[in-house]
Length: 313
Length: 308
Image (cartoon, rainbow over all chains, first blue to last red; front, side, top):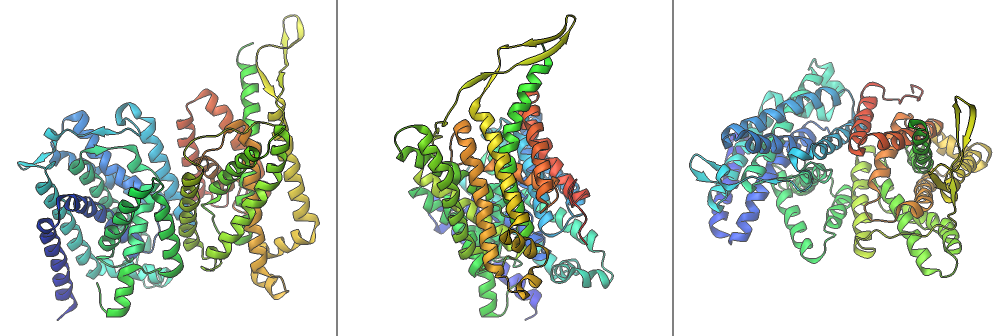
């Protein structure tokens, strides 16, 4: 079996499994799973930059929030249809990631991390500053009537779950295709040895910029979908915590693997969900996991599987 | 009397921000300068300083000055020891690799902050100042009738606030003397210049790192103890000092202590003044964007020297 066939089989199996999950799981957990799928899209977007290109961003909340507010505000103030609002959300994310990529990619390493962190912080503060429209920390609710697409009411569990799954599947196959393409292989080359990639004649800077745009747009799509499916947009989604979470998901699941982000999101989501039943200091768990991962398992769960079972896309 | 006097009071408030900020940021700066790592948990060491100061003062009965003096000495030491333990358990294990250190210290940030939330609780708690007399401020004016002195004219400050500024200056001077005039300072500077060469000359670099990390955290805690009678202790109070220290250290030139102090005075003063005349959110947006652009276009800071 060629690698491409194996990759298609594996990813189709994951999606088939997710379809079955909806009918098997009790309603509370399938609701969670819808949320997880959207967050996994966010993590997959993050993985394009962190896992495949080797650029560690601490500001992806900015892209998530761009999509979220692009969609949310256009529904709220322009009475846009969900489809149009989704497109506006995506365009916002593309524009924001172009600008951030253009500016931040002038730096590397630690400076890149701090610059992205600062831009995201400025974005978060901007959301608070325009509190008159965004309603700041409190956020705003998108009414149920404004959330139906192609005749499906996205506030209902069934359409919501499958809308999330459709988005997830598109992104999963897009990434599976991307990593086997010439472009994806060049990104990995840049991650492994930037100077050599440059010496071989690749335009490293342009490849990195495209990676930021793909990554930012996918994160923005997740943000827009989150607002549309769960009917809420708030400033907390633009805060530092939402820049750290995708890093955590990807690190835990396995950076630079196609299904790692999903695995990481599932584990982290339930870890936080379960611990928040016991204490309000649930971010303690996130902190501990971060430290333990950097100390003992820098390649995450999928990284371990890859080491033991030889092959994983 | 219109604009001038308010600017005067605003710059006095700014000077207090600058004094505390200078201590905190110098802590971050020496850690970066000598160990070449960015400590994202620095703000939490600041917060721990304030929280431990509250805890100590609430244990010791009697005159508030007594508890405060104990806190001023003990809190930075306790925080320094906690930092040394974190250094040993985490940073040392990942070999101070720059990117992994950032991820690990983000983890430390949440662990320290959330543990404080579980033990200390979500309330803001005050610490009483050891002395706190009001002083009315004088104001000079050249009017039509020549030089005039107005006193008192309504606005005032407290002795404690002035003492904070003096204390910060004294501590920074002591630090400067230690760094330039003592053997331990020499060892630290040698490690900063060339870690491998220092090791080759028999300097226990691992121990120097532990000491520097502890000292950096202790300086942040010291700043926090000084400011806690003005500000109250709260488990989320580490965020702003972290952000401001970042700004200061980056603008002052990464690792340059003198640059850090100059930038702290600049940012502290302008933060005080800007916040009086504009909204604090706008001031913060401008400050964060400034950091980003300085890092992009002038990565060695506005005052930093270019490294080869």
